[in-house]
Image (cartoon, rainbow, N blue to C red; front, side, top):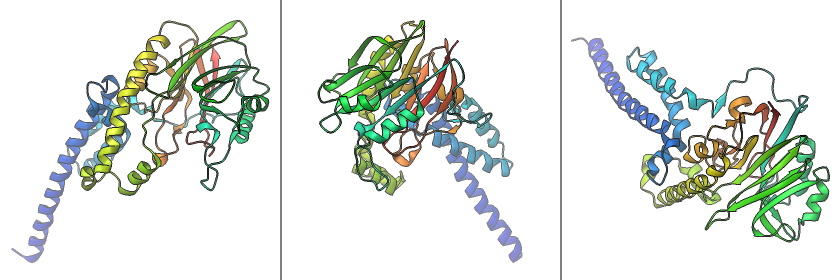
Length: 376
């Protein structure tokens, strides 16, 4: 056997070994992705593994596409199987990505439409351009005025000596009607919770303070012309992944060597515990949201991804405004590499999404969600 033949044979063996390894990886990822598709239907109290897989679903989907391309180039039949797995998940893709067809979102609204803003304002003490925490109430109020929403839903709305209610009300004079639900303190003094401001009369209101938590959901009935809108403003349980945890994850990644690290185990325990807390919260408010009331808007910071049990319970048969009119890939949480959409606006079928936008101001760790709606 000549040297050239030996080299060719060695190359063939190495390629065969590489194909074998990639084949095993491909099968494993395809199985995990199929399980991730089921994550929204599985209560984290029954199995946490599905919740973790739901969190990883978009990354698993992208990995599946890369491997599908690899096997397509290699002219191997497994590419067909991976393509089938990708097709099965197409219904979930629109929760993360929508092709940017048609016109971009325009600030000028269509006749007959109204605008809703949902924004986790981080207590009005987000970071400035240098990363320092500053009082952002004036900047946020200016953004609201420029955006011209008809209804404003804020989470982590905090009133204190620096930002008393009279100050904030004066900055939003055009929004004469308001409703609050605080988990600590009161709107007339100092406190923190949820707020709804409206240009239209608010006639009824209520809320739920979730047990053993600083989180809550509230609702308000808004009279718009001759119609009544039921608006739900929600702030679900946080992941409790703090800044130190985020720095750790960004620095190490989820490599195999780090899986045994106690720090990573602690982060996974935090995530798991709060998956379950959010699931219980979602169950308790879902029955109220989906009671058949017409003209319903559900928005807020859900602290969970579109492949979660929490998302599915809160959305139910409602429309996700991003899935209707979003463009490209949208993230609403600025931490954890800025890849997660955890703030939402849903609405009932008797409303239609006219426009969707999520700008990226730096006054909070969340981006605002701005949606134009129209009564059908």
